[in-house]
Image (cartoon, rainbow, N blue to C red; front, side):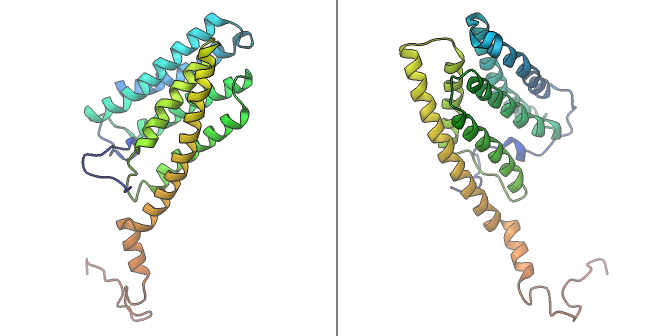
Length: 229
């Protein structure tokens, strides 16, 4: 798997910011998603999770937030409304929503803490890696990564809903599949990030400049010339 191919998936963090206004629809959707997180947490944890009606509302807010997560980036790119604020706030809002949901489910005793901590560490780590390699290129979203996102969102939504029985068994298997994909794609992302940092054109130029004789003999002043001279 390479960094990026023509016509391939676009990493929002790598999309060049345009001269768009800070206050635009994509950013408004991102801020709305952030604003919903505390309300979502309140509904989920209300009465120790025993209020089925509020759990249902929490599930609805979660689904709507997931939908806006898909919409804001798409709208920003298609309408040239990408901003530095949006590039920073969007992944923060995404991780805040997912992390709050997972932590809330663990607080309620519905999800083991080791599952929550593993997923949260992976998601935060991958987000940091994206910015670590952004000057070297873009790591295209893999099929596994896309499947992970879908399964993770589906599993969390199923756990939020106050339903047991066969549904409760099904959500365990969905979360198990999401967990496996989360770990596997996280390891794959680390491998591809390190490889990109070592093999990108930027890295090659930096390595070439450090080779003996590439910049002239030490002490001769022949290395770098001022092109303005």
